[in-house]
Image (cartoon, rainbow, N blue to C red; front, top):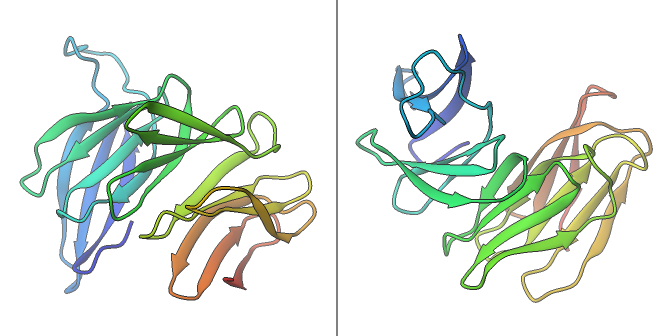
Length: 197
């Protein structure tokens, strides 16, 4: 995940998750380790994989874990629970208000809110939703892995619309930058740029 000052990269080694910070000058350092560690300390236990990260306005980074937990890594490197989805999740995204969105293994986009977690159906099916992105204003984008290769937009005001379709595409990454959405298709080995409405 990219911020104004750095890029953060998730890594996994020996059953543990790490978050690294790469500064503008290229200096790389560990920002946090032990992400997803079991609450009881779990000596010798593997942590669930961390598949997604999102930046918050206060400079902290959220990390989404396969078991549905989201942890917050503060700028000082301390780690604390942030949210919990009751489903397995892949990538996550956040808007400027701190609302968190997750790509659930069951194919739904999950959204945290004052009344708990809401599920936004994509119609992709189990295992077909990995890539997700959000704008600061709360528009959410989801891309299908395989199948019809659909890219959907969930406007903050509600509803759902299809932005693009690349049959058979395996979308594993999405990013929003100004007036464009970028979609990484690993099957076609290409980065697709889509103008936003």
